[in-house]
Length: 114
Image 1 (tube, rainbow, N blue to C red):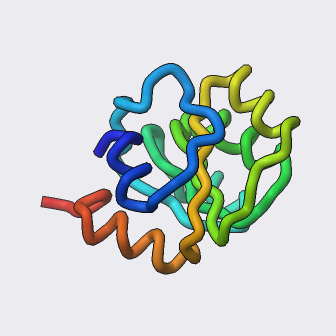
Image 2: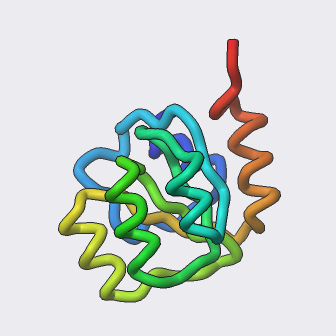
Image 3: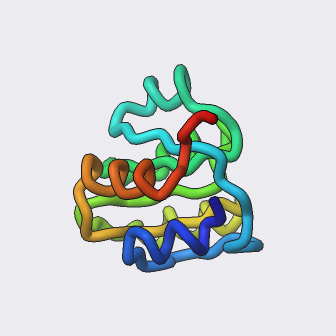
């Protein structure tokens, strides 16, 4: 699934679109615990979180996460946006809860196994 499709599915606001909203996302990880993200996420993943600090962007960089989606209408700070620009990580936000956003992405086919 492309990041541009995620934007439509989640009615998301794009805070930084990285180099390409057509970048492929293969799975999603939903967590506010960055230790869980470090333990369980894969590359080419979208991270859904309500955690609002630069450590989220740093964790995304370490795990080759291509897109961070902030849930519950939380907006990234200018410091977070600048860091995402520096690292080439797309930043989105949605009004949906983490549970609902995860369900919408799964229902649309993200992360389903054949």
